[in-house]
Image 1 (cartoon, rainbow, N blue to C red):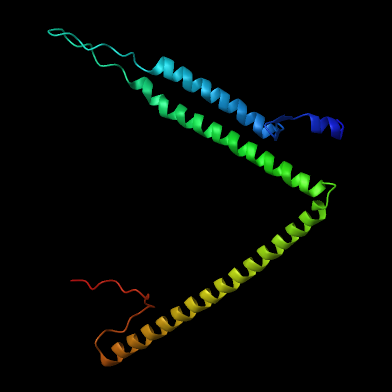
Image 2 (image 1 turned 30 degrees about the vertical axis):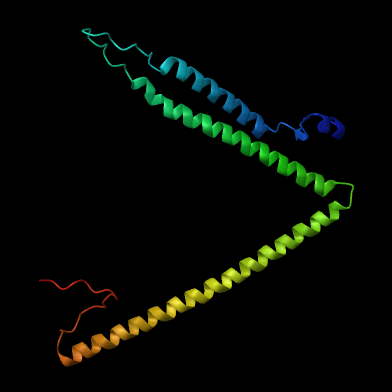
Length: 181
């Protein structure tokens, strides 16, 4: 297919270029199927409404509501399918706009590449700064942990030296178990 034929493959709807990608087409098919399933479920699955009984007449038995158990599932599929259509349509429009900016004959083409390069540089700088903050926090926590272990060891040694507590046979954890009664 030539580029002109590819460009004419879509149609223009209200100022928006609607080109059906495979994702959008698949989403539309799923959404239409989910809509049909929802309509069929509502028509077939909802129990008929009975008029109230007259005086002295036994009311009819309650309707069987087991068919309504499928209704939330079908409704969820309906919502998800149409949400997928909206997401796919938005994705296609964004990709189309990026491609227009990148390959456009106007002055926006090189400017777009420059903006992308600046954005990548900013993202790299942000990532580096966050890594440095994370490294600093990890160093602080490690130092705090070491100091706490050292203090616990000193206190344990003092307890053993004063004879208040028998000598432990193995390394103790930082958090002691509660005393047994």
